[in-house]
Image (cartoon, rainbow, N blue to C red; front, top):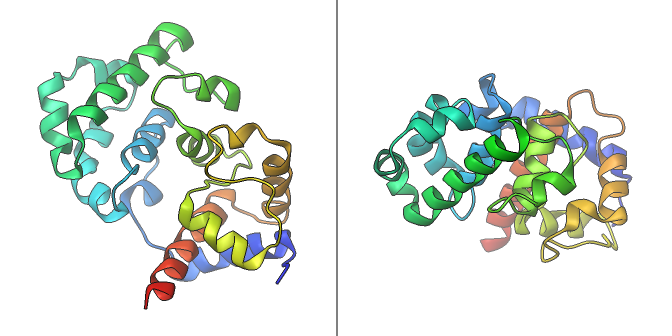
Length: 204
C-alpha cells in the first residue's frame, strides 16, 4: 500500500495524542542538550529503561558544561543499568567536549554539523533536529524503517545509510510526512510508537 505521506503524518500525530507513551522526556520541557542526551542514551536499549535509569543524569546535565562537571565515575554509575555504560559515558563526554570547544555549548541545528560530532550518528542527529529544534526530520531506526516500508513503497533511503539525514530522498520524504501536522513532535513520537507496536504485533 502506498499511503499519502501527509495523511500518515497526521495519523501518527493523532495516535500519539490518544495512545502515545508518556515518557518523562516527552512531557517535560528539556534543553536541546538534554534532548540530545536522551536520544543518545536510547541507543541499543529500551525506552522504558531510559525512562527509569536515565532520568537523573538527563535532568541534572542541562548543558554540556554541566555534564563535564560531573565525575566520570558518577556518570557511569548513573547509567550502568542501561548497559554499555563505559562506552556510553566515554562518547557522551566526548560529545559534550566537542559542543563546548567547537559550538560554544550550543547544540547545532544543522544535520552536517551534528553528524560531524564524534559519537553522534544518523538517528541521534535526526531525533535531535526534530525534538530539540522542531525541524522536519523523521527519526529513522530499524522499527520505523520496517513500519514505513509496510505502508509506503520505495522509501529511497535506509537506516543502514549512516548519513541518511543528508539524503535528498529522506529530506523530501520527511517534508511530506510533516506537511500537514500541527505538532511535529507529536507526529514523530506517534511514528515511533506505531513502529514499536508494529514490531511487537509481527512477533506474535
